[in-house]
Length: 174
Image 1 (cartoon, rainbow, N blue to C red):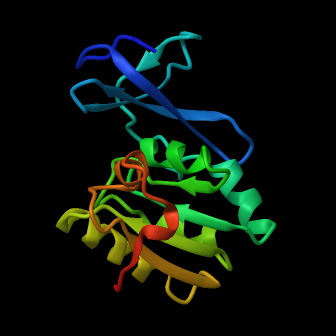
Image 2: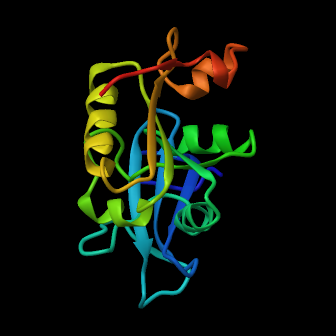
């Protein structure tokens, strides 16, 4: 990637798109693990504004999430975009909310009505609190919810990167 951000070159750029696949905003990750958000500049095609302001926030990979829910396939909710990509590489449908732990908005919940959901908590207190918040938001909305946490690693990417399997995760409680 290497695109310029106010915090240095981006090592990854994550597109957040609406139901029709239209780009709403991007999250740019730097090597220093800073996450800068930008939206397309309507007055300058191909350029960006480094403030989201009133830009609608949506779940990452929203069109794929909607498709999975409609087809009755499980949707994994993780803390960040890197973990979404890790699970997608296994053929799973995954999503996260922009901003990471503690940033779940009530607007995200209706998308997962009647969904089969697996919440994968990061193994730290903010990650567990985030998983509880997502669980509470989806309780009574989703068709089924399971909560997991990698027992020996901070997140699912580290867990799988260490040669562990998805099945090796522990079932958590919320």
